[in-house]
Length: 102
Image (cartoon, rainbow, N blue to C red; front, side, top):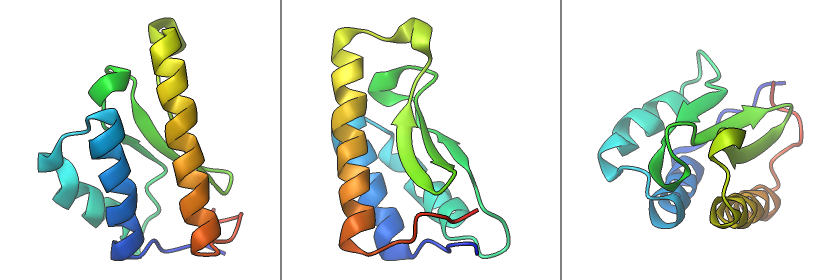
């Protein structure tokens, strides 16, 4: 069963990416289009920001998370990734989103 992300939830997630990870606000419309698309599930989204060029949001195996290139990890980036991923889990729990979406 495929989960179609609502615009409300997509905006909440992008708010986190902008506020916490310095994703570009100018990419929000494209993000909304790709994440709420009922025709095709977008499984990865490069936002870069504070995670460098490898900074991506993932929809993988029923999970949402951010990550970056391991070679670009610093202690600060590892903390940022962990804190952001906790917020993404909290959104899934708040809205009771199923674990499997692919």
